[in-house]
Image 1: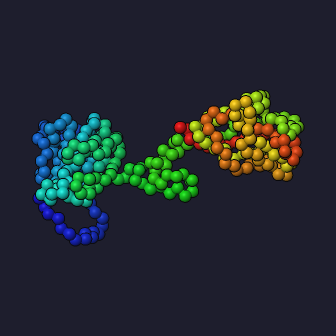
Image 2: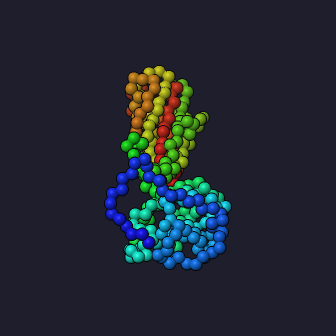
Image 3: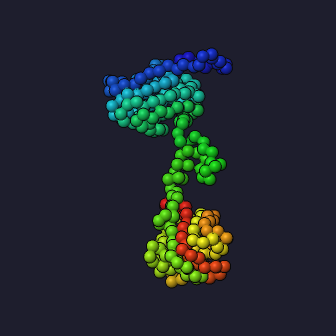
Length: 287
């Protein structure tokens, strides 16, 4: 087996690694014996069904063309140099162009990765039989500066988005009423007064992010967003539109699933309102 040399390698025109295609015939070839490093060569069949063992001289690029699931074993990456077939820092590029998954294992039989149809992966050996897999969504960084997400890698960011819902307030979170609505009067859910039956929050946990208001005439008025607690309605927040017909007002008010919400013209409002429509934007977690 060749030994290591320690010198910086510089190339001009790119670096080309040897390529091998593993076909269905390779995975169904006559079974061989157990792998006992050191062992020279590219690869060979193991005794188990549809198993191939990579050997000390395996090339850097593999592509599989199997017709059903298979197992691919990496060469030994032992501390003892005489049986360290992989060598520390060994790199493989693997592409699954077949049907069925490729289960990648270390030479001891421990499953490390499952490569599904048409997926690709880069595998980098450390030492003592430890292998890293690039690039999974988990180890690709994500800049969350603009999004407001807490996640800083792609996997967690997608999971965070998946578990978060942005519920528009039309029609589920809007209230309105026709005519002149006096102080202390409630807006309607469709035709039902919201203090009789309110809008119900469907999110496990969340918060009211914005309140938007439209009224017929420009005025200054205040509206209470309320939640039913037992038989009582409790004000969560009061918002005020000032000398305007329309307004979008940012707020941050916690709500949870099952909260029943109502809207009224605040008893302390400067004025009554004419033909008001009020809506909420609620964001939160589905679970």
